Length: 440
Image (cartoon, rainbow, N blue to C red; front, top):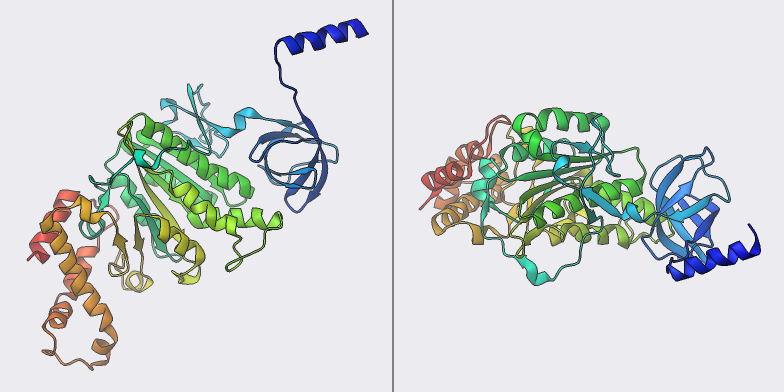
């Protein structure tokens, strides 16, 4: 190209106000972090990284070190070489949305996992969400039917509520979540399976999303062997899709399994970037990510739509004071704790009524329902507080009328909580049964 042609091209670019395109080069790779030269992009900028085999991989700017940018790739074990070309990728920060997503299974990048090509999606929603005025969030006043008698009656959920489902391993979180999914009264279900075993993803899709449920469910799944940034993107994509349908006035149920694996992914990223571990090995960013996700759910006054969210939380070692459990419990509108003792006794779902709580129940139920629930909780807590004395035979019947009633009705209360996995109990039936059995 001659000098005159080059000057003419530069002049045409200036006239069209085309911004310069920065191209960076990979300078170093330490742990999971990539150091990029000549790429002064802001934080969270999505990028494309050229691989040595001729392909490319997505990534994101996550920090800085001197005059270099730090990035994380969205795939693990990719063939990268020093000097690899890096450019901005504007589309990576958006989640494509639309009605064709219903009934589909996609990955963290929005690609189909069910073997069927995905048609063009008409709309897009930012993965990080859209900032809103807190006063645009409506109050939780309408009951939400989840089909589980113990929750409908004793821990009544409301449309737009955020609930943490807390338990150790093997106590029945996934089974209870599937039961709530089957009984949910909503328009759209968005399920985010984060860091799951591949077998569990298949089980969820084939067993929990069968029949009519499949046509109103969107599954976003990543497995445990994928890059940590990709696991976080999956949670953000599931939340973004739920926000999109809420903006259309839909009643959305968002299931995220689990917040613990999301925090683990952020912990890997934080430690790789040199962030100091603060509490039990978790850097501040790992615990700070939880409210950023949870606060995006709720009711929208403008559209009239809602996101009722259920987040499972794995209590490592059965410790419900684990930092992730504590952070989740502090931000949600209620928590359901599953008891290993009840599970070992064959009571499913193994909900520990005494330690579980719904902060919105007072605004969603009537006086008779609330009084009966309080009576049930009083009897349950009285028995649990005196359980050791009763088992040792140190309690003399007749010393406390309330405890006498709690002992006499313990089997009845456990029977009220227990519910077969394939049985659904509507909200109205749950309320009626509770008032008839425990109302004053």
